[in-house]
Length: 384
Ligand SMILES: Nc1ncnc2c1ncn2[C@@H]1O[C@H](COP(=O)(O)OP(=O)(O)OP(=O)(O)O)[C@@H](O)[C@H]1O
Ligand SMILES: [Mg+2]
Image 1 (tube, helix red, strand yellow):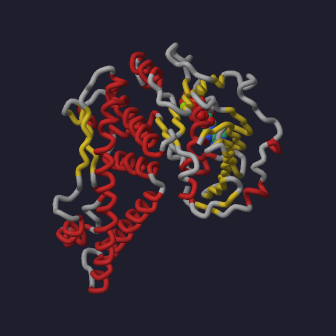
Image 2: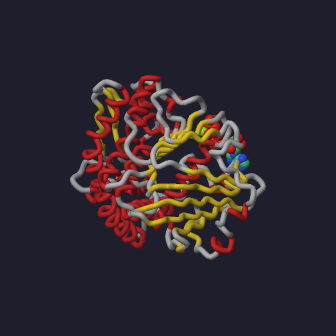
Image 3: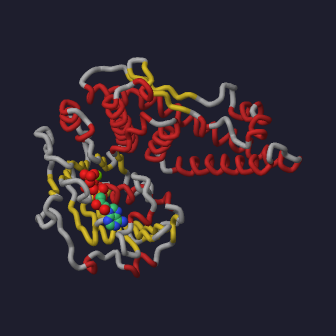
């Protein structure tokens, strides 16, 4: 989907804002704290209902306001698409083309985005959970149905853990038969998720390698190895052999929630042995590889959101990125002037809010995320 216009009402720092987006590269340039990332965050919300900064809904609503509205108009297959969100404390309501969404996952296919943000350094630097989440995000981008599998696995593990914790190290017969049920379910769904992730890693590795080489200007060897948390043939076997241990410790010690994606540059683990710049480059390469694969599989590029990416890279790497931006719609933010390699189709200059490129709408009534319309929608998520 191609986004044409986005409107914000009482979102973060904005009372009202109307922004046009180009079909190619739109650059948002302005000083620190001017609200550039806020705009990308709003676009990301339209895609996933989640803040890529991990912010709770209440911090997305402008201080002093009750609700925030994010609305965007775009085109898909020559047809107009309208996505509307209302964010209230602890609640998000959404509709597409004025149709209520029954489940939050219904939104996942409407607008796809790839986000690179400064926090993505964590992808390489932090513990295994961020890398598992990266793989899972790509799986959902490739097929929204995978979201249901992720939720199922998560639910099984939470319920299994709750049972183990409540047992205080001893399970009676009823408890053991409930544990049998969770193990049987996790053996199937968990193994399915691990296989999906393993296949994804094999598919994405050449793209990761190319993206890294392009940014670094050298064909460094990048490897990505999916490491299972169990060694037995099946997850069901591993759960059985770990059962006593799990009951004693009150946790689930094997399963997709304990797996790791080990990333190496020239044979060295990037988490502990790469330089900060190499880690940043690899984090960006991971995002670009996911973007490339999603584009290839879906036949249409997601909207690429690059937050502050230029300040993260040395001039050569920044130039390499700008000269090789993937096809499709891209929005980039920058706190300093764009380098010559950037050839934006439009620059939205946030330095002076009165410039013509940013339309600050005075009349909130112009933004027809009318309350009556939004109130008509069902609540799609209570925890976003
Ligand atoms: N709920 C809110 N209500 C009002 N203002 C908010 C809210 N949340 C954030 N802000 C304001 O938004 C501003 C930050 O916006 P943003 O992060 O988009 O800046 P930026 O232009 O990306 O800056 P940088 O270049 O430093 O990344 C801050 O000044 C902050 O006070
Ligand atoms: Mg920012």
